[in-house]
Length: 295
Image (cartoon, rainbow, N blue to C red):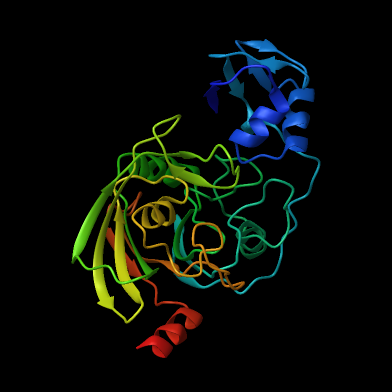
């Protein structure tokens, strides 16, 4: 990860904790292990950044002392062969270990289920080609071999893997469809949030189509041209129709279920057989039941 500082006279550990997903303690560990360089030089946590400092974070090289414990888990396997798996992930399940959480993630369940997972992304992310948020449910593609992983990773990069999401939005969206083209970057004031911003951002495009309108809600499908962190959640909040029950971007108290956002459909070309694959996953039961109450 590379960041160019836009402030001065702020401690490096404080600055990075406010501008990345990592805690100040974790940043300090990276610095102690010489995994953060400023202008290609090692620094101490007390270093105060200058305007235009080039900060390199070698977080992929850092391994905390931990064991990823295999955990028996009821995996909803939509498809599996010798090369790939398609999992229907429930809301509330973290995809892979990180930031101090090394138990009860999807990876813990995967390594209990099989020893055949790609290891390109290291010990804590075996098989993980892409991810979805903890409280987003739905389809996730897993690589079982390194060759399959490399091909799928390139397919994601080249936007050849097609995914469609279903979301329930707060409010009644009047148009039939919309395309939101607005760059996304990390929120300066809230480290755990992303936002639409022109600073240190990346382009983000979401195509949204109305499926059904309710008295106070709108059910929509979303297709992404890009895959930014929290993209659908940020874009929907940006246009004034946040995803229902979103604990971060909706200005209402949320239940433990989290945002009503589901990775519903996935299309890709099999990395080994070249066969076109298409899968769908039904909405989670809690999502379905809530729709019944507002119908």
